[in-house]
Length: 255
Image (cartoon, rainbow, N blue to C red):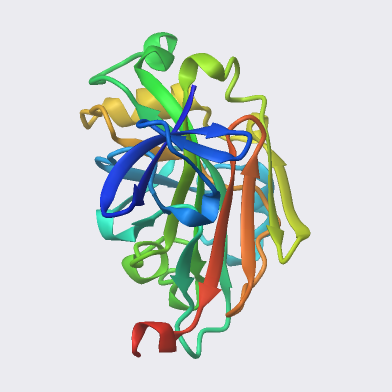
């Protein structure tokens, strides 16, 4: 089952897809553009992975100064970073390289503490699409993510749909891609993760308790390119959804 969280006519609603757009829980059918899309679940802790696709590691090889083979590269995000489908993301004036990252987002469904990989998938509630922007100008110590790069207001887009885990037979068998203004610029496959989902849950739950609503952003493949004001960026994952976002400038935010 696919569900979304949207705002319409002064209220929050749960919605499901239908032929004419989406249907609210009260029966009303609306077009996509007639609602405000929110992240499709109430997010708890947002845990993001860097360099979790081998081809992306190769893409950034000239910038890397450390090995990533021992443990996953993990960082956190605050709720202010999250926006929904059809939202806008600000590109600050003067930056040289801002790029998208198409990622499979894994939503935890029940408490996980010291979970072995053999039981890890039992703790997954479902999945959504993430577009996690980064501004490479702000990197410190090369590719060790810091707050200005990866935890920007409105820089992490989730949605449109939350897809139940039961409806995704193998989350490691999904094609993903990014389109900028209709042109495919990034393609990859979740089978190419360096650390798969059970490994990530085992690793994270070994030192922190994962709770329902926590979300793991599993990394992106190669093919990241610079995006500019006015660009429409679409991130897609087969069977999960098609997430649309637009890049805007400082003026929209009064800066």
